[in-house]
Amino acid sequence: MLIGCLAQDDSYDRQLGILLNVAREYRAKLKVGLLAQDTMDICKKKLHVAGSPTFVLMNGGKEIGRILGISDQATLESFVELHLPACAAAQAEKK
Image (tube, rainbow, N blue to C red; front, side, top):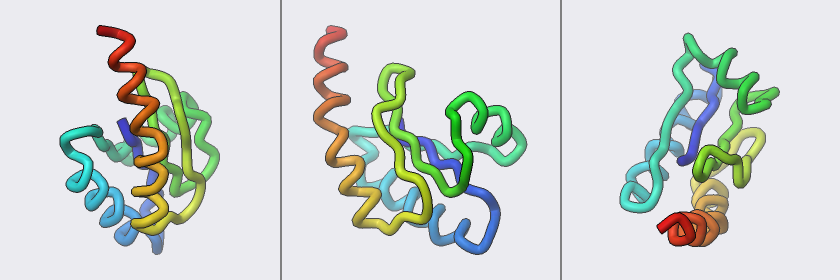
């Protein structure tokens, strides 16, 4: 699962658009979520997120990677592609 932690600031719309594009592109392989503004503080503490935007990739409840700061489409897709094999391997081990 890819979790987006986005503050509603000047970069919000652009970063949300990129997150939605990644969600569409990888819908068969990856769940994508956006932290709700009313639960952001609680989730940021739990995930140890200090700034926004932050993108956290989770597998089986454990963090396997994160990007801190503003990201572009290519960077976020490369990040996902880099970590997808590890996610698939972990899922195969569970079966």
